[in-house]
Image (cartoon, rainbow, N blue to C red; front, top):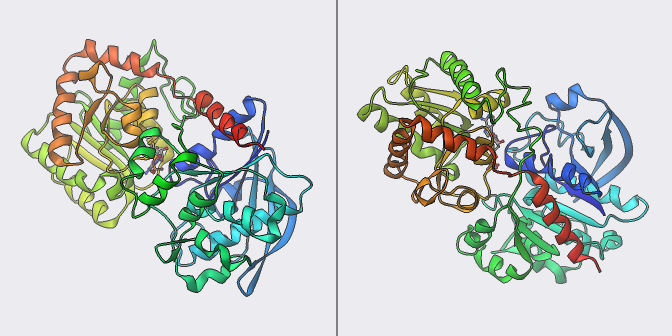
Length: 471
Ligand code: ADP
């Protein structure tokens, strides 16, 4: 099959979170299954774009309302990603350092979607499936089926994956004219609750909708920012496919970001050496259990309860544990975390910012990874942690529910039900008891490192889904 992925992120070209990891690995595994898969993404002015070479393959014009944008499609040269990567350069809209959070994100991503379809429209033939990811590409299924200009794609299946339903991208009808012309009869296909909503449009128009874990699919039928009815209505064409991880990138035996690589046989030595580096770097005690958190500092991840957890456990159980946080996000959470550093020097430290290399070292050197998420569509961190022998402590939600079983239920992780200081600290106390039993720790580490969360299974599930849509 010829599979086209369209996304705002793709690792290593541009990454904010898990979306990039998925789009940067799923196509590679689809190619291993004998298919053709490529990715279309915006060309951001990032470190990646400055340090790589590209060759122009198409120049065109994208019309956005009353304005025309010139764009160029660039193909990555000397590509070692394992799939073809095409970046759409739209001067004036994407020649900026960040991926999101500009006042004109609506205009930026509509233009990107129009440019992507304009380019595909003039190519000979059509792909077998167009797979779109998250709301930044949410109008594509609608445009493929209802905009006359793109009628060539009317019979091409579109698949839409909800990586994160919290972000819907809605805007007012005053911007309706940004979309390419279509019959007003179809207005309802882009609307939700009196706003234009690309996520809702994709859920309505895509031939199939997927979520990144089966539990998340169940949960969003009850809670997804006012879109529950729509999700329940479209349940028949929806599928929960648990994400995989790129087992080549995330391999403690070969990880170039680790000074001390380790295998199943050498896990104890490898983790000890990595923990020592971390503890030296952050002034922590390598003899004590090391709890960590990696991620966006937002309420969705339960990051707002972290300062309270750190304060309470460090005050009432001083010297019993280390805590290390890596993340960035809401300023009040960042300030709360930084503020506590001087109070609990020697047992708590945070690194505010995004640091890929440090994240690998933390997965390798930590004993436990905290994920108190309120919402977790899939969660990749817990899967990376498992592969690096770090025991996840998770709230039972979404993909965390599907991937982590509590040690009390013959599992290998520690689970709790609420995103609260009490629940998380209770789990941390259980973890400390476990840490005191090196034999049990060793057994669990070996067990979790052998769990196979690679893309082999999920890549096949997606291909089977695409094939079921063929007409
Ligand atoms: P999200 O909801 O943010 O997409 P996921 O668990 O799906 O959450 O994916 C998060 C990805 O981003 C993981 O690869 C994680 O290691 C990475 N990550 C998040 N924050 C940071 C950070 N501050 N530094 C390095 N990597 C980070």
